[in-house]
Image 1 (cartoon, rainbow over the protein chains, first blue to last red):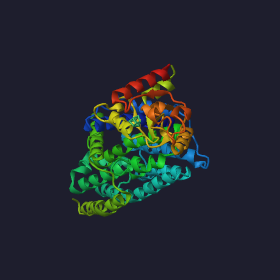
Image 2: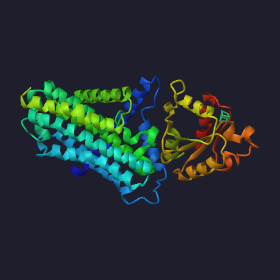
Image 3: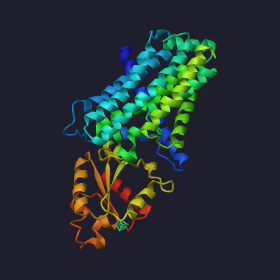
Length: 303
Length: 139
Ligand code: SF4
């Protein structure tokens, strides 16, 4: 009963979706203000979801079963990751050994769901989007894992969110060292790619391949995809805060940190043009991986 | 009025189908999205795929080629899908009425819910047309 409550309401699906949709609104509003527009009202993203639920769901004639199955797979596993993370936050002592690894795996599944869904829709533009998404996943996972290894080294190899939090509460945040800072920057860049925002949104490039991977989706499955985008917008910044910046865990400072990360994401999004997929892969496997490796070396030397 | 329709009118996603216009209408439509008029205030955004759209926005006089395409696009749209004809061309073909390559008007191909006349219509006129469309949907 309690597990179900945790999964569906707090800190799982309902809570994270609401926060994520609000964050999505902040994103749209700030973007609009940067472009000197007024921007949508605060309930806009909720209305979008409700509207999509009321629309017809079209399944392409040649599509496979996975077409409808994929969005649910993505959302369910993402909510599971969110729940584990949120629970570790509330009761650090109850987290289990290796939950960080579980979360990392679960966070890749939404991207895989997009790839599976796009390929099964049999649309040529969707396949282009899916193949770009696949390359992007391959590109950002390496530096992302490296930056997490820095955290593990700093916390004496504890692969457990509860003990990472405890370590930071006792010895100061991981961010407060050179290697931690570098790894944090790397992780922010990877987060931007994970969220599929500009400059790494080649898989959904609206102007060139229309809606890319999501082109054939309508109605309910599209709403599910948008919900999982929203939940991801809540989970990934929270994961970064957990790993790097968790000295003070009072709700007030958590909200402040979350909004700071959100503003960084939005600013990166609004001040950069879209990268071609080969440029994105080069960027992640070149300078970013190098930075991450440097951070690992620095961490080994205790800096 | 039910929640579904209310949500629909609060978040209209527009797919822009240019059926051989002279492009002036398309420019005016882009103007509606710019800071001066900013229809994202009302939840209106342009989308890339017809599967995501609630409104099919048509400009221009359909010719033999775009006629088929328009029919196809409309059949691909998820219901409820509203059609808006923007500009004199799309509303009634004006001076292209007797042209050799203009088989029929837009409303003979797809059911049009709102007409926005003008050549091209001003952004204010487009917004007024959207208001009328929303009023019509809400009944
Ligand atoms: S209505 Fe006028 S501006 Fe619009 S497409 Fe026709 S000729 Fe061009």
